[in-house]
Length: 127
Image (cartoon, rainbow, N blue to C red; front, side):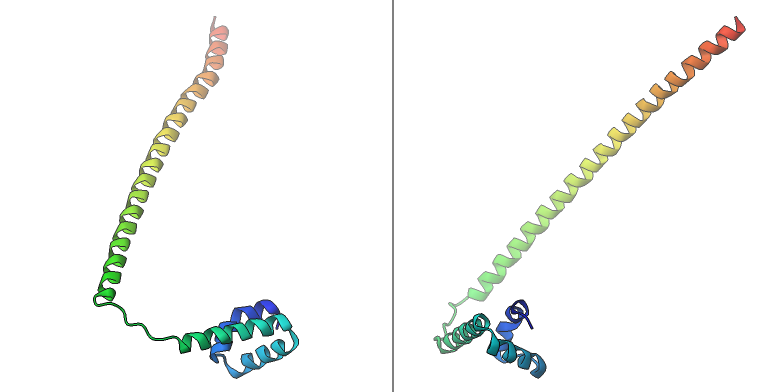
């Protein structure tokens, strides 16, 4: 195990939520790495402080206000996304129209440039 992997699992390790094999690997790395040992100790102190912190009761109606705010934000994001896709659709439509116009103009320009010398050559042969 390296320090990056230790860092990935340190919260679960401090909580005691790892399977025994991974927990043993964490213990072995912690024993040989002062930086990771300090990180694990810090994580354990944070969990202990959270366990000892007093429980705070949410004000009446707090959950309903949070859920209502989330619903409003979801609607706003959905409207923003719909507006974005409408703009994208219009932009692509304009791009396709422009490409069609350019392609048609190029077709006639090249067609004229190619057919004119042939017509001139044919006229000189006839004349």
